[in-house]
Image (cartoon, rainbow, N blue to C red; front, side, top):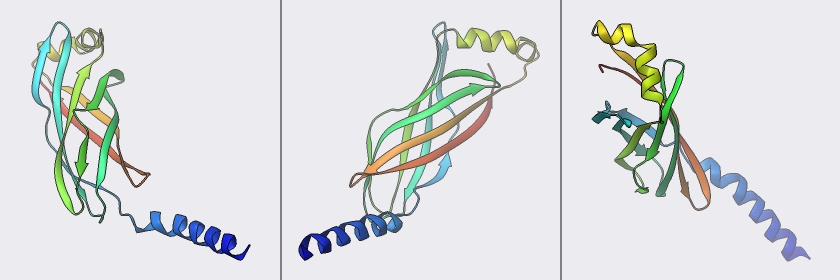
Length: 151
């Protein structure tokens, strides 16, 4: 009976202490949209995010839940190009794939037609999070980025 109580106490103590040992994974830099392709099927691009892991454990970056907006229009989605292992005390470039949704580019051009004719720029923003996991513990890396592009 005492062994079960001691085991339960140790398990609960570890469960409470272990998450406190982890530091937030930091976004060091977000580079501009690159490899921009514009066509009849919409816009595709890459977004490179440089992240730093200050922890002593590696994290596997598994997914991204990031929304691409142009003004108030939900224009597309941003996904992780591939799952990446972020080593301990390491900085790595994470490539995110940006793609507009079907019909979104037409709505964007329609809404920003005057700006486009006058050579103006159109504001794009990406906001969401990248999810990583280590030892069953999930960590979310918040992403918030905006840039103006000439179409």
